[in-house]
Image (tube, rainbow, N blue to C red):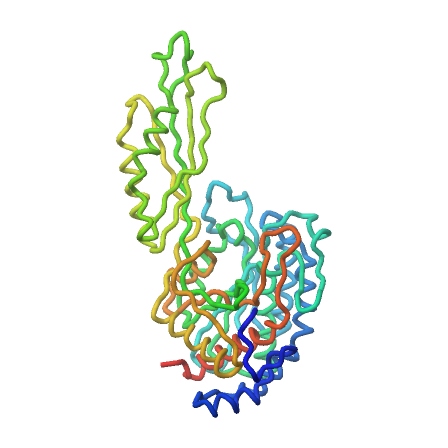
Length: 434
């Protein structure tokens, strides 16, 4: 994570705050010193965090590798048990089946730490990666300068490690003023969380705050909104016939498919964030036969949950208007991820986090409350929760889903551990930004 260095900051540590505080006070800016015991502990956790990260990276855990995701779930569950959490490994039963959902999805680790207070706080991350078994040999864990590289390190093993060490810090600080701290770690995020989505929504429902530990990007910013991702599958059944000798005896599925796709052009409203684009099609096998079947797939994006419902309803209505009455047209719509919408509570949480970063650590943090890019599991947490959901509490990094460049920035370990711990403390003590 890069931030604008202030005159007070050391280019080697970035955490030398004393001179900066004096200069800020002289300029009329009120800065709070970091909470010393939390600050010191966060810095001292760096090597232990890197050791955990190495162990996680060295467990290959592609979403469809059931052996791998089961192994990493066991590793993480054991760590949480050692830290005193009530821990269980759940095999999802309520699976939302999509076009590419495997027969079996990976486990979910659920852990709860009970305190003496009232607040309920949840932290989420995912243990799976996009990589295939055997890819680790090309991207083993390694440290070069201020970067740590490895398979799935940025997306999202850094987030899993961060949560483990935040829980560890709470234990070392003997901090118990929260009501509960809940940890949910799934192993099917990279395939749109078909098994974990219902569990994430359920566990988040009564939480005061949910922090998702996807990476904070290069600048360490947090996100309050993400685009929803949908997929539409159109299938046209016609009738084959010889294209030269008797074309009139067939029902041309290609004609009907083209008609259906074209008549849905007006369903996109990009100015409102609703987008429908047909991107894949398959029809016919030989040139001289009227094609009996045609299929197409569309990518859909939305900024509001209700937009997907309205879009599917409109599409189902459109397909009733057929070019060829003898054809059969079917439409299937999947909500791969709902949109994450910024809320009053999420803005309040983000503002408080921004204040901790700026006033206690003298670091910049951007807050994005407009949706950009793809979706995350934070959206499932937000579906029914009473509290706010903030995405991007993980480390700064780069190169997710790449062949050899995925890394996290080591100097962001301590600030991120400090931030999450301080947020739990302030929420628990009723010290949130008004």
